Image (cartoon, rainbow over the protein chains, first blue to last red):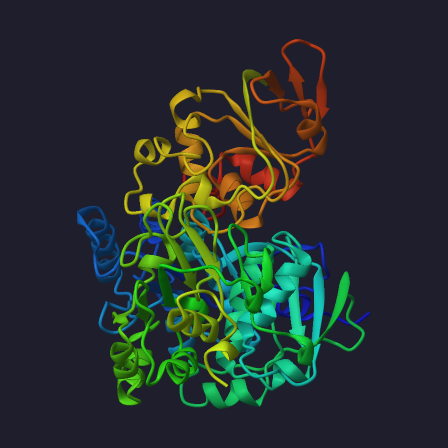
Length: 417
Length: 165
């Protein structure tokens, strides 16, 4: 019997021949924590009084930095102090980093065949590059700091084949929201999603990252795509160390296989209050107060280019505010270089440096009671971006930009031909 | 071991933002987190929950974020166990790692109502109504997790593995 990507990577990292259901202790390549999950891990680790596996540890403040208030300043300081105390090279201060998952990818920690864990649920993003990556808690991150290994239950796998040509204005976001709409928010619970097909091969790495990033919104442990030339080209100047692609065997065993015709997909929106509550953008039509473009899901340069192309020469509708947050310093520099920041500002948007702030209802864009936001982020739970009586509609950068211009949620084709 | 508590019943897909909102993650203090537990779904819970109470929920409890603060907030309130039809995987791991008792049980979800008094019997693997009328079996915890729980959580387990006394 052949093996899935998840089975192969966990076999490789545990030196065992594992199949779905087997529990293994596996070697982790990197463990990442951020400023809200890190502090608890630092205390637990220091209580062990053992050396830090510093080459495996990556520290990225992003949730509440630049510091929101005194409490968050203390958390950020705790991370900075821990990095200094243990001589951690892989610490990314504000001004050099940004949203953790995009930093993990840009900085070459992420590569095909690797096993990466992170104390942030969207760690599953790295599956876009053919890695097995998954979110963990702070306490288990502390144990990886000390031992470099973690237990895993080898997940069953589901296969999603997406073939055909992707239509205009349809992005990775529309593909993953459509899938979540079909299988539900626990449709891939405890499982690995393997997403493949010629439509996936035709996507930019950025769109693939969006898909992998939201695997967790279907409950998935990891969401993996076949590593190909697109991934190799991206990593050619940035991968840290060697890597080799791990692909599924033809006769691998899947608990479920689903087919999608990419040409039938349309821009969609996940309405409140679950990512599975999906409708075509053209049928939503509700007025909005805020449009948000950013996050680990959709804050890359490719996302900003799509939005800027729609907004160029247009203005945000009166009564609507728009916030644009490039995911990292590198994305922001590129956006400045390409004139995208000017396009957003000319349209009336507020543009800030990288932070997760608004996505989790932390700061820099929190919603008041009764307010409605169309957002390129990943969660629309009750109160996610602010008051419990506010609403979040999840959408692609194209839908966010078009909706900001229209003042209500629309299909991008309503604003641009 | 048996211990009686009030049942707090919730539905499907109780996510980590409902359990502890992102806006409270700027402070890891247990009592701070406990004072806002379940605020997104119940304004009463944090005020009225008592030591030893039991949460019973539907499918996919704890979906969403990896924030361990979700478990910390419920532990801080005194919740002794969470019984759900199913759990989101990161929440489940966090609960085990922090020594919170978590059990899967469809029976318990169907048999118990909010406000019931019940006793958890971990040796028999069941939940019994104090009235004596109802009993629900709980799914056995996998052996590898039991080893962690029996060590007192992941940190004691890791200390044992590292040979630290």
